[in-house]
Length: 464
Ligand code: HEM
Image (cartoon, rainbow, N blue to C red; front, top):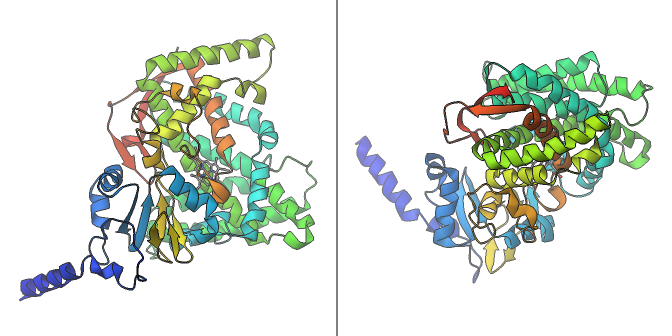
């Protein structure tokens, strides 16, 4: 009997498959081509049962650069043409709002800038950007340099997990950017709570005692308490201007009568920026080490460039400066090519705030729209031999709008210069002093959530 019922349900579902989502479409309007899969489940099972890149590329081959699908309970339109991505992220940005699962919004804090559009977002974005401009980053170079000089010798004579170590490095840099020279006892507690938050962020959102999600939500509440204490302290401190990182900039808004931020707005944005800054950068740094390991000629060329920088520094008897980092063209291209090849943010999400029509396709209000950065970066028409790691391709500027590792438009990344700086400083010391060997060979890629070498790239480091 039960089998009969199951069969009946499957037949009904099959009959409705396809017509289910096109119901209610205005006359003469056409949705993009593509399959919506099964009602409710859509194509989610297919996405999760295969490499996400082949999921997108097989559909792109079948339906073209703009196609529809249904994943994670949402009807979606995928865009793998640069012009279409630009349309959504820049030209028609007001019609497509950023969208995140509610559990993620609650964990980061609803006032964080990525969740907003309009004047509140612009006001915050200006402040965050000002905190990551070259003029602001210059002062943090000695501290980042010290982190690297202290960290690398601790890797010697043992197998280290590159991803774990890069996470620690990127996290410490994010903390420096967020709090400047504050060395309050609260910072240590904030770091510990943040680690609990991070563990729960990508877990199933079951807020039940004992689960990583529940622990993370509790850590988030405690983080609020600690951050508010720190905000209060900073407000009354007499520290010299320009030493307090993003926190000082956000507190500076208190002087602007109409634009003052509340304590929760400040706290949510500090947590948001630390969150956005560290897993992303750590994943890219892990790929840089893998690509340089696998491409010895590039590694040797980078080493020659960095030896030149080191000579200049030694002759002048000084430490690395901002100007030195501007004279690293090949190392900078390695960073660019790593961002393209690895495309760790494979796509981003937007949601249509009203019915939108573009390029002859109708996108209903409420549908998700995903610019597929990875597909664009791996298009053979835009980047010949796309799977080859070849930094020399950036000797010529890429075609306009075809390269967007940091997104585009109002929500583009304010941290691109910091991520580059962290990479250049690390590579300066690493390539001139050490060599590394990957243990276990090429194991493929894991997604957690960013694509990284499987197993986190175990390596053994030795002095040159
Ligand atoms: C290599 C490392 C990084 C990559 C690949 C990366 C990539 C991106 C991308 C693609 C976006 C746009 C997302 C969208 O349009 O939905 C973004 C936004 C953002 N990133 Fe990064 N990012 C990196 C590092 C950083 C760092 C170091 C910071 C620290 C300031 C940061 C802070 C942010 C913030 C705050 C946003 C949201 C901006 C907004 O909504 O206006 N990111 N990032």
